[in-house]
Length: 207
Image (cartoon, rainbow, N blue to C red; front, side, top):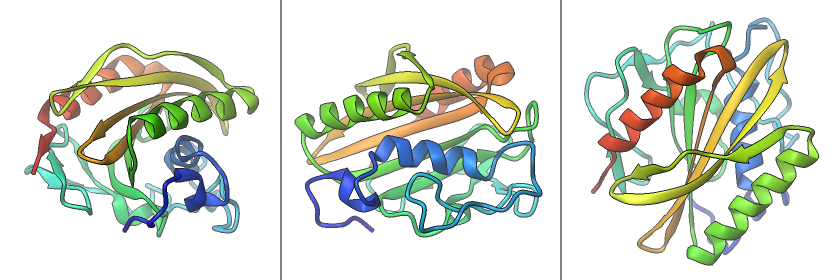
């Protein structure tokens, strides 16, 4: 699953992991269900199956990331959708709301790579800079505890295919690995999405 690399950037032709994760989140989840995913050759816009074509099955039990290092319990009405994003290096788990809210499926991508606390800081900073360079509004994210550890993060807001989107990106370091979690939702559903992210984080269990 993970490339033997000290840098996330190698997994996407130099693109920061957070920028790639945000692209995964929005590429197949907007109101325009008839628009196909971008070409896999474009590192910042990985292809994804439209949720209108393949909905995740509502998960009633905890699900594990592909690496098997943790498990989470999706909120009611959510399911696993990891296979929908295709073979994106480092993407360990994708959870998605089965129902669109304001034309958008709220969803979460977990990206994992080998690294230390310094790598985590570097990737969070790179993510902020790259997304700001794309014209997105970047601000600090509210505190969040994931699996008993305090996570650091930021929030971005932008418009994607006519939908106002809010994305929250968090990172933490655990036992030699860096975990990046990015939740994306329609702006009008941001409060509900934040509560669901907290629910997911509270259910996070290391295995």
